[in-house]
Length: 402
Image (cartoon, rainbow, N blue to C red; front, side, top):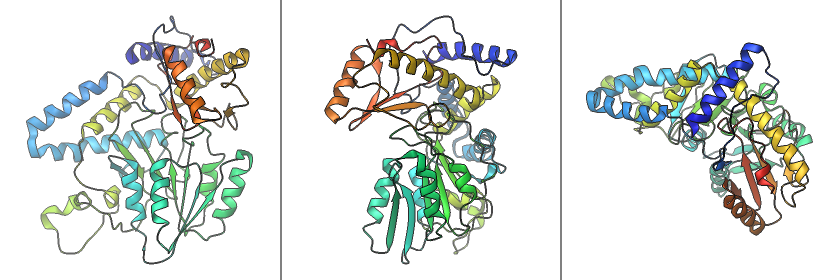
């Protein structure tokens, strides 16, 4: 199904580009009569090229055996890094560290701090479970202090977060580009990062923004760590995540793996050294079929001339049609009063979140939508509805409200 609607999207996107009609909605020939997958902020459908990629990984491993590392580290990883750098406007692809998940990368960063000394962290109350849970555990230590800035009201979030950040009291600041529990984009986050105190390390969790919202990190590439992965909007599945590392970083992670000395395996000594590229934050052996899948999708989009900006415009047009149908329907739960938003045109990710009043209400609504062939997800009393390029451009979303 992905491939069918990808072809429609591709044709429409190329037509819009050739006619310089970037603000118009794309036209496709037919609407979906089957299930409507609106949990795409959690799991995007995988393009067909990912199957070929997994098979190629198996063939390379069978053909090369232990020599596959030369191919992976010499060809595949650099190609993936170049693709990530191209999409995020990062100047140094070799500074992009990889791992099976972002938690591994972030915890490796946290391990670079001297945990026998006071550690002060600034974040928000809207961060994803893995980081939120890790901080809760760390707070059990008497020397760890965590300050969480409330995300709402969103109108004042940037001012409140930056005021705390500029106090200079924090060793690490951490915030999401798009909040997982609302879909709201952190207002002005990249500008805030550009002004951060030099002594404060900063992480931007880009997982719900990467390959969804156009992102230019060129001005802050050497100021922040940016994390994301392939599971959500890239549509390449789990197991392939990355973290951009500022050039000149001299942090020495305590949590370090043997890949971090890959370049010196044959001549290693008894000291623990670190490279000046991504290997500083490298871990250990992982399944690189995920790398092959992610690279295949990135190369597909590059070959077809599809940019994140064109994807974002397409999704925004779908969101506008959804809002029009929602406003006309006057649904008791799916309405503007329950929709969490800041700026629907410019300040939102690719999913909408509705307050349902209770977990029971959210579960009941989820089941009602499922009975109509509409797949979505929920978090406690919040129900989330996502949008993707494999939604037909003439989908009017009225079936959600009938």
